[in-house]
Length: 332
Image (cartoon, rainbow, N blue to C red; front, side, top):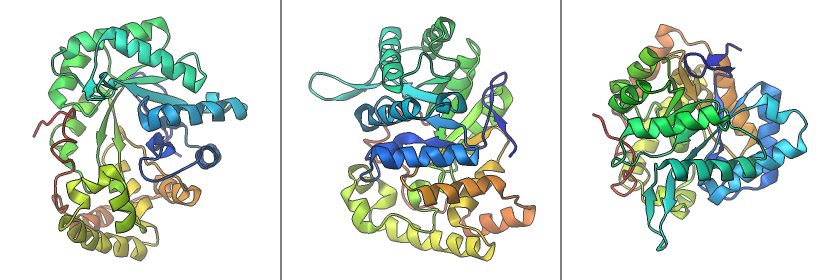
């Protein structure tokens, strides 16, 4: 396994990580035991990175990881741990983004308690508050590094211009963005800016929220999940178009002797040595499929075949609804 560096001077980690939103009930019900089984498999396969957040399952994801560390000797030393903060709610339950130094440190302290650790290896601002200059936010994060509570800093869903401003203040180890064969927007500047600055591009939803796997979530399940039930790509008529287009990709993967999930991961890994996919799953078998993508070597011919069946812009519908777009920075 060829390791990848997270940040210009950061540690080497596995080519993929675990997106621990799946340790909550976001994509359907799960249990702590199922989350622990995925982590056991990750350790077996040499996957060393976990990405979570304080809001996943109302803290349930962090608690599941923390209980795993408590139960499995040596697990904390095996894993490079990232968490995020900044998404919160007011007294009436309305969501907003708080990038203040006091909020970020208070939320990080809560995360450390849930995880049962004295520091995290990477701490992200989950969503930017546009009213707070990113230079000021970066200085707040830098103080958390100086305090020893975080090993490095990152941002989720920011524009290349914001990354450059932040990196002028303090090294930014990682930027997290949705990136997959169905979401190619990062190629319009973010992939390049991360490479230029020595920042890892951590790709979430790398299998298109199940579209780019052999077993996409059923229509019935999608309809029962609030986020997907209101997302343009997973509602009709777009859903039917997207399922039909992805079927060609599944057929190609089968012809190549692999799973669609593995091929999706392999494609991302071929987009740059600084790209680190973080697939999430509640299934050990599915995680093994995803991890198999680390071992796939794709030729130029293979990459061309993938582009032929899923050309840039193939997906029907925006990746977010208007309400879901509140927070991520648009830059193209």
